[in-house]
Image 1 (cartoon, one colour):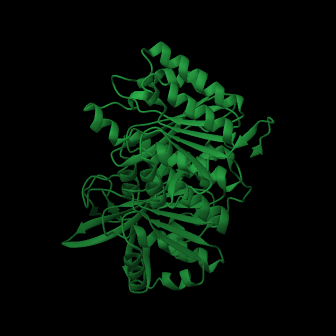
Image 2: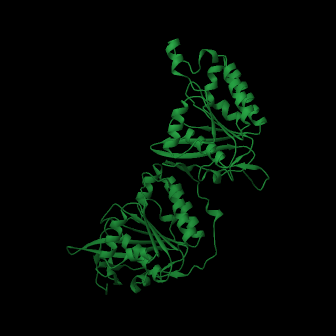
Image 3: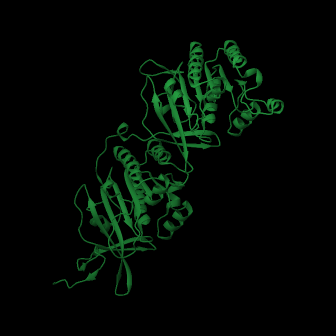
Length: 487
């Protein structure tokens, strides 16, 4: 148990990341509702709560009103939870009653009025005097009352009874269209809401009486060791001082095009069609950073680590050796199973634990898959991550693939050009029956840049950038042609 700045005693939830959302944890001695559709993780959150209490020497009570105790223990064990030290009061319905009565009811005949049930709870609470109580699900009490008024009265009485014993209470609800849990929301001191849609999990805290909380939605995942919560990133809460010095690519002609390089603490979008050399261009900056003694990281959202390293080695960029020397981290991210909040936490860990100075995200289209939402969501999440990295003085390279190979010019495909301080574009040209590549700078917020195009090639020894193509016209309108220099 801890105490926050407002002298409120806090109780850890036991869920990685959730205490951060709650600004330190649950408030001791209050009651909280966990709500969500079936399979959203309500009981798993309760298991975190009671086992964390038991691990710290607190007396914990798990009042089980639905699953058989053996099933509860088996399900807990499958996620690595041990209920040793947790007192389980099993009040789930037995199969014998169904066989005897030939009808289905939540409780046995001697429990229909609720007297026996409440007596068992009162006796166990008096006997154990628990510090934490988890009730799963509290909505089963509806079957013990005649109407909604009696149900509310009983729940209020029940939670006050537990709070009078100085217990922190967590209870779940099973809401249906016919039996909503709006009344429980009003009666609780706080609400933790879990959602599970389109194979994506998220967590919000719409109510938390007596304390601040982190605005959501927050990312969430259930893995082999239980629930992980990934709080929404707040860029303004992070920042360091740094100099906005130019960072060169190490290729003189390319640096001339960029007006000396890209500045530290800026976001550079490298865009272009498939196969034109976007990732290789970003990798060049990573290699140059390693030569300066700085650590870099690349997060691959569209290809594997092996593919990235093989391609880099083929063009004279030894990324595997940089990894062995711990000057580079290469991490593949599966966008279909990784929320934007979880991804942001991975990036934060790399920056704050390893002092990483250059981060490349390859690419924006894979990141968009992780959103499963509107384009506005993509921009908002990328904006927050980008602002955080800029505040930390990290140079960001964001690779974005456009759909068209040749033809009408397109700066980016994901509508993220406004987030960028710099936009470097690569393009194919069909000239006299030959497919060629050019590089140009469309935007640079800090400092000047060259307003011409240069031929761009990838060789066995790396990137080669030619002289300015001053006699080339019509590239941006999709109709390139060479003109006489005198004209």
